[in-house]
Length: 279
Image (cartoon, rainbow, N blue to C red; front, top):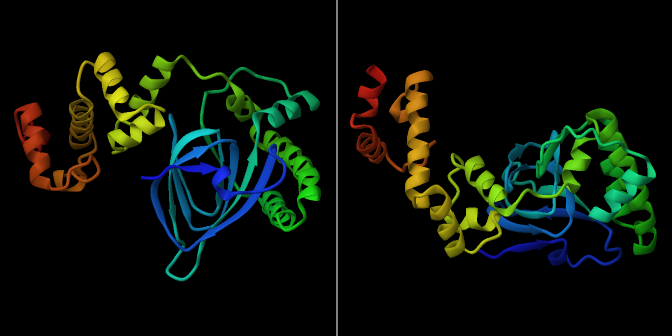
C-alpha cells in the first residue's frame, strides 16, 4: 500500500509553520499508511475516523476531533452514508510553533503526562465556531492566512488547556523513550488489534525484515505465534470471566471461522473452548 505523506502530498502553498486544508472525499479508506510530517488537528465534520498510532488507537464520530502527533499512523475513514462525502478540516502545525506558544504564554509543565500520540476532544459551541473560522481562513490568500492561522493556533491551544489542562501539550513535544522501549510498547499496545506485520513494522518505523528480527530477539518467538498466543489467552479470559460463547468471539480475536478458532484453542489449552468454559 502506498504511503501518504501529509501535508506534502496535499501540495499546499504558503507557510511551513501552519497549514489548513478542507479535506473532502467520496472514497473510504481502510488502514491507510500515513506519515504525518507535522502535528495535526483533524476536525471531523462528516463521517467517522479510526487511527492507529505507535501506542494509541482511537475511533471517533463527528461529535469529536483529533490531535495527532507527527509520525506514522494507520488511518481509516468512513463515509457518513451513501450520498454524503467524508469531510475533515486538517490544521497542521510544527513543534517549533508549539514551543513558541508555551514560552510566550508561560504554560507550566505539570510533569504528569503520559506519552500519547493521539488525543480526542469533544466539540462544544466555542470549538464549532472555531472550526467555521478555519474554513473561512482557508479561502483567503496565503499571506493573510499565515498571519491569522498563528493567532487561531494560539487561541485553540489556550482554550484546550483551559478545558483539559496542559498535559497534552507537553506530551506532544516530549522525547520518545529509547528505541527498544518504544518498540516493545508498540507491540504490547497492539497485541489485540489484529494489525498485520507490515502495519506493525510501519508503525515501528522499521522494514518488515527488521521488525521480525527485533521481535524474535526480544520476545523469543515469531510474531505470528506470539500474537496468536496473546489472542487465545484473551479469548480464555472472555470465556471464563465474561461468559462469552465461542461463536461470539472468534472473529473478534482474528479467526475467520469458528472451527479454526476451536482447533487453535484446543492446540494451546488441550481442551475445547466449551470444555474450558465449563471446567
